[in-house]
Length: 76
Image (cartoon, rainbow, N blue to C red; front, top):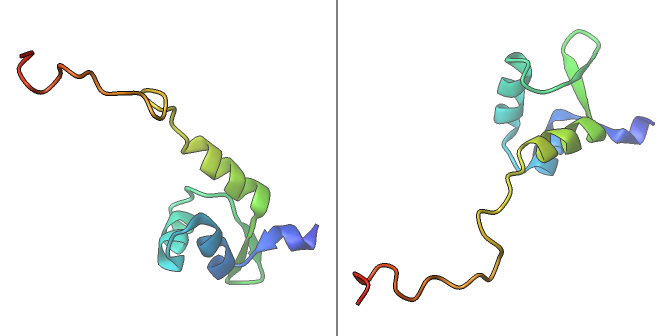
């Protein structure tokens, strides 16, 4: 669907990065893009979502987990 294609500025806003960062990733082929004409490129929203998912990392401990009360004070 055409509405799923974003230009560089819109895609950068969607990813919360600068357009220059997105252009650099495009040049380095770190992100999937569609060439439109000689210079223009578009990005599929699904590809951007995939990039976001690939960057997810699990939490080291559950949110709200209490710190060990004896840690950091020499075990006193």
